[in-house]
Each structure stands twice: as structure tokens, then as C-alpha cells.
Figure 1 (cartoon, helix red, strand yellow):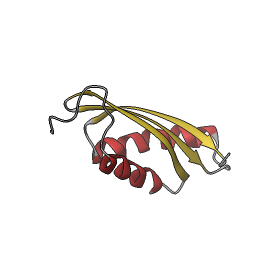
Figure 2 (cartoon, rainbow, N blue to C red):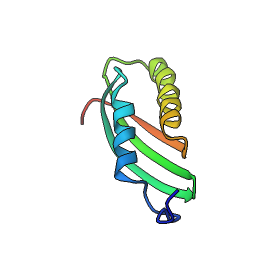
Figure 3 (tube, rainbow, N blue to C red):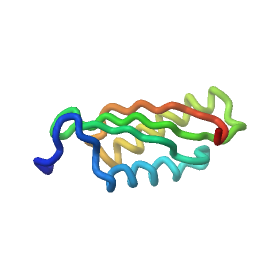
Figure 4 (cartoon, rainbow, N blue to C red):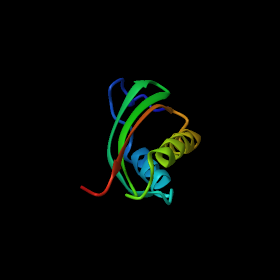
Length: 92
């Protein structure tokens, strides 16, 4: 872990790009949206993110897919421990 990762500082652009790639790989996602990240400790990152989903998805389908997205993000970047995703439908 780099010493430059100060409390309150956002994560690296490389990590943000990897998160975008992970989220975009889900066929239910039309587009990864705006992200906010913050270091809570040396090996702990908080992530808040908007995700645009396909319009035809039901609430039940969103309830199923969102935990899978969180799990995949944590698998790829274990330091991202707190994840808050806001589901949006349509590209408005």
C-alpha cells in the first residue's frame, strides 16, 4: 500500500477504471455512472456509484444483480469494502 493513500483521499484512476470495467461487464448494465471513492484506512476504500441499468429490468432482477456486482468488485479489488450502488434505469 502506498503511503500517499491518505484518509479521505479518493482511490487511484487505475482502480476506478477497473471498477468501471467490472460493472460494464454485466449484461444488465447499460453504463457505469458517476463514482465517488474515499480511503477510510490504509487498506479500506468506500465506493459510491450510480449504475444505469436496462429499462426492462424488474425490481426483483435489480435486487438479484446488485449483490453480484458488489461481490465482483470486492473480488477484483478487496480493499473496496464499503460499496453503495444507486440503481438508475434509462440514460436520463
